Length: 77
Image (cartoon, rainbow, N blue to C red):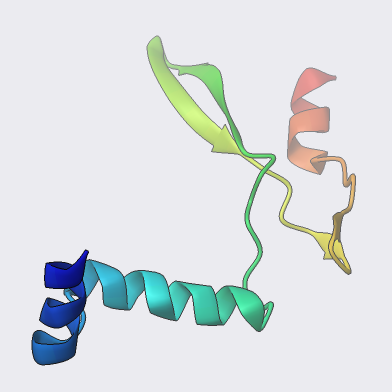
């Protein structure tokens, strides 16, 4: 631990430490939100299988809105 503190004092932070530090500052300012409801759906197109990431990015405040996908609803009909 002492060697690590001396390295930081003499050389400064390494790139990964700088990234974590800046990400923490951004999180504290609430400029970004974690997308925690994303999932991968298996879909087929012309015989090929794809994994498509689906998520709901429309929000009210810090909550997600449940907005129906009109194109997907039309395809189901």
